Length: 143
Image 1 (spheres, rainbow, N blue to C red):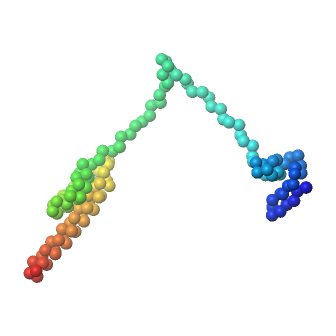
Image 2 (image 1 turned 135 degrees about the vertical axis):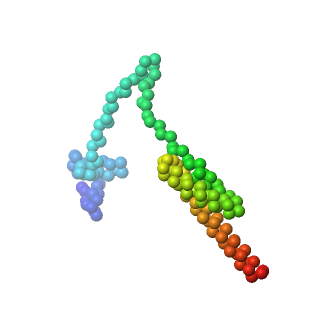
């Protein structure tokens, strides 16, 4: 009644044995190919129910406020962005390095802002030195 072709059992009409089962694809399969039995659902005990005055009890939980952002880190970033004719870059570096020390000591937030202000301060210093060098070379050559 059944044939095995490439590891698959091919059936004609009915199961060859009483233990075989009919799958949703319309084919009969041997009992060892059956899925494992599904465990019974887990029942949970009911909760405590509403408390006095019909109010459900609440579970207290801890809330954590994020650390405060260091103000010098914000100032360092702002001055690094604005540049203000080179003096902003100098102040961005000073505020950024002081902010890094304060953030480490006080466990504050704003480390990324301070780093960004320091990087922008050094970029501004580099552009300022480059502009100064070009101005000096142009003054010395007379053009």
